[in-house]
Length: 496
Ligand SMILES: Cc1cc2nc3c(=O)[nH]c(=O)nc-3n(C[C@H](O)[C@H](O)[C@H](O)COP(=O)(O)OP(=O)(O)OC[C@H]3O[C@@H](n4cnc5c(N)ncnc54)[C@H](O)[C@@H]3O)c2cc1C
Image 1: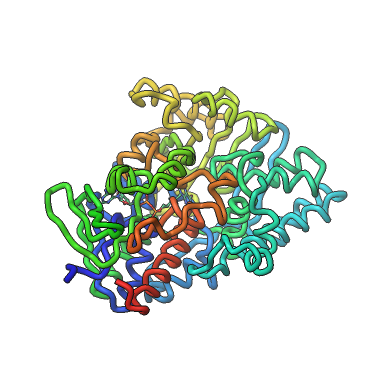
Image 2: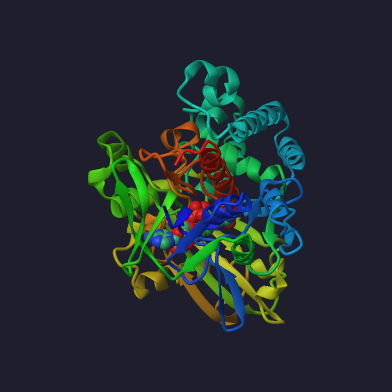
């Protein structure tokens, strides 16, 4: 008899979602997390009285009716986590103008249509298609067989029609003005891809997960979300082992029978769920000799998303200079160029940067009379071989100089400084190359073509941003729910 019904490797937001839902059904679930705390990417840290959220700065699907809101309702946590709506969601600063983006779809469409009156019809049509694709994808049951062509094209006509196209392809057919195309594509940068590469399904996920239920941040530190979910999981009888790393997923025949930890402990389970990097799951924890050759070559050809260099600053004074907390600064009206440099492992002098001021909405992040700032660049892991201090200093000086155009005397106001690189993200989460969103959302790795939650091993499942639908907190919560549904149906049918 196995030690437990379900073992979950990794306690990121997807593992926690899946674990809570299965424990709520009465299954015996054990979660194993290598860090001392749960949450993975969704974590926070403190330095000299300032609080910083490592990565997650804004979330979709949190307001009443959204996916995350519903999850918290089910777990009885709505009174414990408070969301702050961000409206407007952000400001984009271009060389010759500033554009404010609403988090409400109708307002956003009206704003764009008044800027480009001749293109109103195309704008409406683009969002109608994104909405349809998002709805179809969200409605697919976990048991659906994508590769049964007739039921796919009749049940999911938009996914079937647009599944292999990029967002750039979609724009071509509906709008003409190059600056409008740029504004309509600007959030593809949240998948770290240009419009010419991101899939329509990936873009639909990014846009609709924000527009359907607004954009929010969490009051206080973002890590409260995973931490409260971990407490709820334990109250439902779940067990979390922290500070313990899984070294091996033990395979016998075509089944996963349990895990072996780095400290030598072994545990058996009827089902194993991996919430960690998919490459690491199969190549390191299982071992290539167990993997069917077709699946092995599929994995080898897959491309992770890019990463970030982030500079966290505690600064003296308020930040009245900025009118909103989330800002993005562009030095030219061209989204593609930045990615040309990134493809050569470079960050150009004209690279756009994020200028976030979390304490403007979350005053508890900074001591009284002070503020927090997060400045960041998109980057590749291989931008530097070792991410030494000299490399980090060069990037931080560059960001501070550019941000000084918005915040006068910034250099003199800095009281606390910390930074994160792709290497730090990789060390913390074990996501290869510090990938921020699992596999890049390009058409062949997106929508129906993304890795599914089932694997070549009957009782081994995946959850998290390396599987469907993809990255971002709303995405991995969806993934956790879908994996829980698939695993629960297995137990219901008595399949062990
Ligand atoms: C810099 C950055 C900025 C981001 N900004 C946003 C944002 O603003 N909004 C948003 O919605 N999303 C954002 N994201 C994306 C989002 O944070 C992730 O997509 C999501 O948190 C991933 O969750 P996950 O559960 O799939 O995996 P992870 O968070 O990667 O969790 C995996 C867990 O597994 C553990 N683990 C790994 N290997 C082992 C092992 N062998 N044994 C035991 N445990 C192991 C890790 O320690 C980790 O806790 C950002 C990500 C990054 C990196």
